[in-house]
Image (cartoon, rainbow, N blue to C red):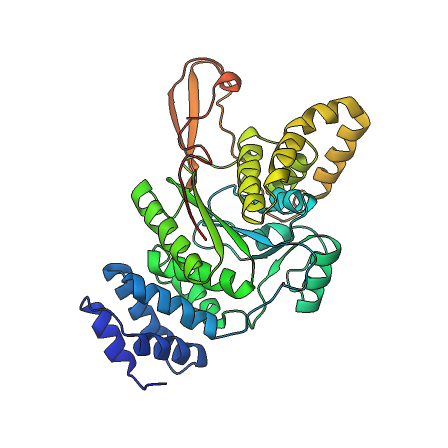
Length: 384
């Protein structure tokens, strides 16, 4: 590998130049080994945020981060694999009901999830509100659970894209979270190294997302889809709304409880709708198109089935949800959309849940519908 100097790489990007393949390979490898200091990588990350990267640079940066560690292989499983990644938002607990739904339709879901980044909560943080749950699994444990259960949600192992693990933490404290090249390469390096056959990306748009406007969200989605295509991973991206919190809860334990309600046949309509939309894309990418409609009908009928089972099923679901509520000393969080009175709408900024905006509304909150745009499947990009 060619030898370069960290200052040389930083100044080239600071001045708006394109980094060469050898520069990218060297700086990613040197940072992973500790030969490039955090302060220097912070400066490079800020230069990337301000000046961007060319398509070839992003692809090479992603490949260098994948090459920093191991790659997983799920070809020995008896079923195809599909994974989902969300760019994050307030109240985004979709992974929790989505993984078992897709697994029930015959597709294995190796969901390697992350921690919270910026103001968004992480799937692992949510699940750790369950006493006794652990995020770290060995590769053998993952393979066994995928074969026997069909889905696993856990942390990526230390050997999977270790360069990204270091850079991920650095971006969170240096104001460079929003850099599209770094977001795209971070997500795709882990997902490609993970070895899934199909990947569905949920790119959030709105005040509670990293991407505040549609054009930047589309740019991120198209960048990631192109990276997936380069790696021969069937990749689809959906642009979905994060102008208000997703669901009725925001907070680790209460979001887990709400996910249990969805799996039991209830839960907020927007959570159910997005879960089904993502499940359809995952099943279609894995070659299980015929089962997508069955899953949609099954989830849509769940509330009616629950009603037929009677109060005993409702009480069992309630007990399961109650068991997952915050333990003493844990923070609680809940955001409601309706103001609870006719003629007033309460709207919260997902990024600032402590602030509410009251605006005139026509009709009771319970009968008003959320804005129609963007529907979960209204904007999509696909490749592979």
